[in-house]
Structure formats: structure tokens, C-alpha cells
Image (cartoon, rainbow, N blue to C red; front, top):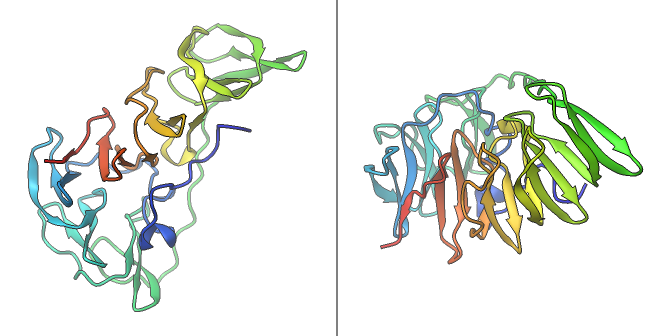
Length: 272
């Protein structure tokens, strides 16, 4: 299924990405409250800003992760630790790798080659993780097939029948939006059967871990995000783009600098 798939974490890979601990699909499940603070890069250092982009916690860190229930990982040099929403340490900066807290209240860390989970208080957890809950995403309708092509009949929220003229259709399960492909190019249809995004993109990638919202859109090796209205939330300009976690997504700029966006597409960094 070209162009539509679960999005791999594709930023340049420091240790935490290599071991697959940060910004994982599990951590992306949108069950917690939206964050009060967003990681903000000031030059080459990270602090945290409020939703108006006002720096609240000073830029003291070499890297930082999204706040989940007021706890986030931070990095100084080669080591990681955790802080709370007031900037107070939850753990020492001591881990070789550290993960974002998931909806189960667990984060994975590596300390002296020992990999284990901690809770939001920073204490080591000894019990096994609870089984991940399954979510049934309601279909917005049914595929219609005719002479090797695919259409769509909405059965929820619209009476529109999309003609069978596409090579592939994927239901986003929300907002009446469908991902459609003709040949190698992808676009987006709304519940009225109209293209809100033309068929000119190389890939549109969504993940069930965040409810298929704000998919990543790729064109000519650059990336952006699809908004809930079926149009581009951001320009297609980033070198890499990760799925949204808690209304925050990590990207790499065209100049190779990391940074974060919020779910309105606002950039939380200042290169000055």
C-alpha cells in the first residue's frame, strides 16, 4: 500500500531513537490532557514555553521531550533525566536513554546497561505493564469497487458516494476525511467527495496510536502535516516529521535543527 503506513520515527537517530524509546506510537496515544508547556528551542538549547510561545522554563538543556501529565525527559550532555512542569528534577540526569511517558504512566529508561520502567514519581517499577487497551475506530462508510477501481459510500455524517475512480482509499475515521491515491500520488477527499488536497503528494502517513489525526504529508523528500479540515496544517518544508504526541510533534528543519510544533502548526523555536 504505497504512501500510507504507520509512520516510522525518522529523525536523525541519537541513542534514544536507536533503542526506540522516545516518541513511540505507544506514547502517542492521546489519552492524557493537552500539555500546558511545549519544548522550545532557543538557539541550540531547549526550555519550555506556554501555548503563547512565551518561555516559562529557561533554555538549560541540550534536548527535551514533550510534557506528559507535567513530566518530561531532558538531556544534558549525553545523559537524560526528568523534570516536572515547574522545572524541578523528578530524577537525576543519569540515564543513557529515556522515554516519554505513555498512557499507562510508564517510561522506559536505560541506566548502566539496565533497561527498566519508571513511574511519574521517578521510582523504578517492578510490576509488568498492563496490556495495551484496544480502540475500535468507527468506519465512516464502505469501499465501493468497480472495474479495478475504488470508491466510497459514506454511511456516517454524509450521504455522499465517491465514484470508483481511485486506486486506493483509506478512511481516516474522523472529520469525514479520506486519503485517496491515483497512481503514485495521494490527496485528501472530504465528506462531500471534494478534493481538499490535490493528488500530488508522495505519501500521507497516519497512525492509529494518535487516532489517525494530523497525518504526515510527504512531497519531494520534504514533510508537513495535514490539518483536521483536510488542508495542509503546515507547509511541506521539514527534513523529517514525527507523529504527534500529546498535541506536540517533533520535526527537523531544513537546516538540520530539531524543534517542536503544536497542533495549530506553530513552531516552538527561535534560531536567533
